[in-house]
Length: 442
Ligand SMILES: *[C@@H]1O[C@H](CO)[C@@H](O)[C@H](O)[C@H]1NC(C)=O
Ligand SMILES: *[C@@H]1O[C@H](CO)[C@@H](O)[C@H](O)[C@H]1NC(C)=O
Ligand SMILES: *[C@@H]1O[C@H](CO)[C@@H](O)[C@H](O)[C@H]1NC(C)=O
Ligand SMILES: *[C@@H]1O[C@H](CO)[C@@H](O)[C@H](O)[C@H]1NC(C)=O
Ligand SMILES: [Zn+2]
Image 1: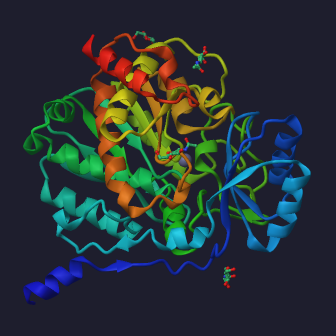
Image 2: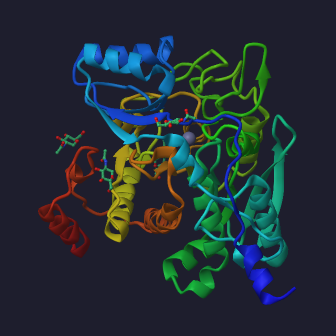
């Protein structure tokens, strides 16, 4: 093969030929400021008389809501908006075209360095790449299957162990099929940890050496694959029921099961399943965590989207003991991320940041059962401009800022940070920038 042909092969992208299409579905945001507007949005969600899919559900007054609307219902929808005097902003007029530009790049087996973060990757290619990486670095990287999905796919954990250490870090991603950026980031993290010594980043290198890293890049392989091949917005696993399909794995953990922000209807996107750990994916992850629970120092879960750092417990309004230390480290991470790319994250419990409580999440279950010192969830980019249609060009900057934030969070020491910089609604001005700088000089 000549060089030209080889280069050409590296650049094969493929678009998606999904069977569920979202042609002319429009992405909107709205902020209910009156109770009747909030009620209207909540009814829309429960009664489904208009074909609306929520990307960010209605929670409370003044919290923004994101949703897509089927074009066949656009007249009725406009009429209802006028009736409730609800103002909406059109974010993306045709969501299908935004999905179509989320290209998938083909990876060539064994060319581990050709795997890049300028496009998304298929499940097969990600699995091929991690197995190639394990083959290439046999002394530091191990690949283990921790169980099988409903459709019989392996769920892999990658162990990265550069020197002999006791403290464990467990990372989960891809628990929701359509949150592709979460898996993109952890594959980036895997590469950076393996090459930490060569990169010349002392703090990253220190972290790579200090912990045993256990990374599960795709907890929900069936849902991830289905989101790539069939329905871009598929979130759950692929369990079949008589009256619907799929369980939301991040509602299926045995922590206050079935109580908040979840559904008992298999047709719903947040269906919790028939019983705690009814699903092989959540069960496999929980058993893996149980196996590694000793010396578990960090448990970190990656999701999208919303630009938030979320501290347990998901089902509580009150902050638990040790909240403040995680909060302090998280704020330092947020300042670093802001300084790098100007992205704004907010921090708090699920209730603080999203205005809802949730049950059955992996992080709350881990925190409650094994009390690791640091448990946190990253909701990665963006803030709603593209949502799940995050363009390829944003993958790399998202990975870079998230890595910097993660390193900061994991190496931070308690220090004073301005409390009010982190409210979701806070506008960053020149004065605030000055304050951020001052905070770092202290
Ligand atoms: C989407 O809308 C455009 C413009 O109104 C129209 O030409 C096109 O046929 C629509 N596409 C589908 C698949 O309905
Ligand atoms: C809070 O931190 C202390 C000291 O690190 C630890 O002993 C305690 O178990 C922690 N509590 C929780 C709920 O994590
Ligand atoms: C989201 O971020 C973009 C780009 O930084 C900004 O233009 C937009 O106003 C932000 N939207 C919200 C709701 O904060
Ligand atoms: C930020 O949030 C804190 C606690 O929720 C609150 O006390 C404070 O007034 C808020 N500040 C701004 C500027 O909204
Ligand atoms: Zn998620």
